[in-house]
Image (tube, rainbow over all chains, first blue to last red; front, side, top):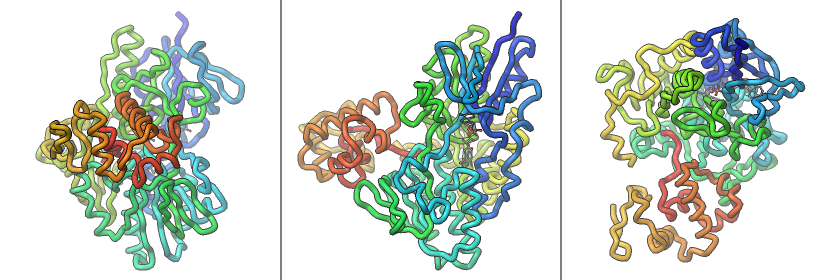
Amino acid sequence: MTSRNIIILGAGSAGTMMANHLRGKLDRNEWNITIVDEVEIHYYQPGFLFLPFGIYDEHEIQKPIKKFIPHDVQLLHTTIDRVEPETNLVHMTDGSALHYDILIIASGCNIAPEEVEGMKGELWYQDIFDFYSFKGAKALHEKLANWEGGKLVIHITEMPIKCPVAPLEFAFLADDFFRHKGMRNEVEITYVTPLSGAFTKPFASKKLGHLIEDKGIKLVTDFCVERIDNKTKTLHDYGGQEVNFDLLVTVPLNKGAEYVGRSGFGDDLNYVPTDKFTLQTTIAPNIFAIGDATSLPASKAGSVAHFESEVLTQNILDFINDDPLSAKFDGHANCFVETGNHKALLIDFNYDHEPVDGTFPFNGVGPMQLMEESLMNHMGKLGFKWIYWNVLMKGRTIPFIHPTMDTSGKHLEHETLNK
Amino acid sequence: MTTLVNEKNVQFNEEGFMTDFSQWDKEVAEMIAAKEGIPVLTPKHWEVINWLQEQHKSKNPLTIRKVGGSGITDIKEFYALFPNGPLKKAAKISGIPKPVSCI
Ligand SMILES: Cc1cc2nc3c(=O)[nH]c(=O)nc-3n(C[C@H](O)[C@H](O)[C@H](O)COP(=O)(O)OP(=O)(O)OC[C@H]3O[C@@H](n4cnc5c(N)ncnc54)[C@H](O)[C@@H]3O)c2cc1C
């Protein structure tokens, strides 16, 4: 019998987990697995939040991709040009093509600073930075080391972005950073968001809204940036609001990979139309998608990709056996939110339930508290790096934490506030 | 919270978004618009409102950029139609929930 091919596009968090899960489940004589990526380094992206402040150094947040790919999975280092669902082919920019029986799109999303006039202008990486890329986070680290103070503006261009709380965490960590440097008085911190608040869910606003105020962070809401004036160092919004900065830390528009657009099946931001429960795409039954690349109304986070990978593994096995896809993703996300001062919050939610308070992962015991600032949660956030490299990327599961959200231990009655 | 419109009790949440879309009609929309400082809803307003409702029905998350790319209006005009926080205002008038992030 000739063997069949599974191709995974992207060897980031989601693709790496899928390669490990599937290799463990599928017969080597029957199934070849190939994973494609254009870069050779796997970055621990949650570390980009800490790099600018020198909490992590650049070496602990990068490792070679090949370290995490099983030796009997073929790793190809090339750039994807487009997918042709009619012929089951993936074309690469080097002219080669690969045939698949099953395709898994795991190419994530990335920043597109060129989409806003003046963002990637003469001040880019001089006074305007992002921290959503390794390059940006590293350049910002160098800038912050010698910055003498002034107006620091932290800005989100537009939702959705990956890890939607990261900009807020950046603001909290910046407050902490300048306090420790003894120069908090010389820095004015302003948080500029296109949403109607820093927290938009009523329960979260009620419980956490004070954090912004306590830390002396100014808030500008409903701000939809039109252009950035590099001469006057001003953000202009469509409604006529203006915000001045000395140092701008922006989260540019996030977009799926360009090849998704070129293949003709992406939405307006190059996200892949995907069933939110089964992770099968609407492009073709043998094309699946996972992680930041999908159009799912779930958070774009590593924890989400992890939960999705367990669901997708089952559904691919079902697909191979000609069975109905039996696993359903419930939108489960589990994120630590760094609040500065060696504290963090933990939030746990899914498609149906919004973040509420309670204990995690054990009902009534914890040890982690949901929606409360604590040192334990901060340790959890820092510990995530170890778990990421040593557990998740090796395709192992985290004990006691399930892909579907557990509602025990949660005060769901507080959710009524959100409804 | 309820408000009486044409002898109908319309339900709103604390922030003034409707909680039951089946209660929405043009009169309700006009009442909310007036409260939000938009005395007259022009045909352009209605086009945008209809488009937002369709997007909501198809469960497409809404952003200002999407409205700009809708082919119905551009971002500048959207701001002119629904001044100050256009997406929030337009969502209120359309009877659909507030566009939110995860927390
Ligand atoms: C600042 C920041 C903080 C974060 N904090 C957290 C956190 O605290 N907790 C959490 O859970 N998540 C966090 N995340 C999110 C998390 O890192 C992502 O959700 C996760 O990495 C998504 O995995 P992915 O596999 O979908 O995409 P990625 O890991 O981005 O992988 C996509 C891969 O596809 C490759 N690719 C793309 N296009 C092509 C092409 N044309 N040809 C070949 N290869 C291609 C890329 O090179 C890349 O390696 C954070 C992200 C950022 C930026």
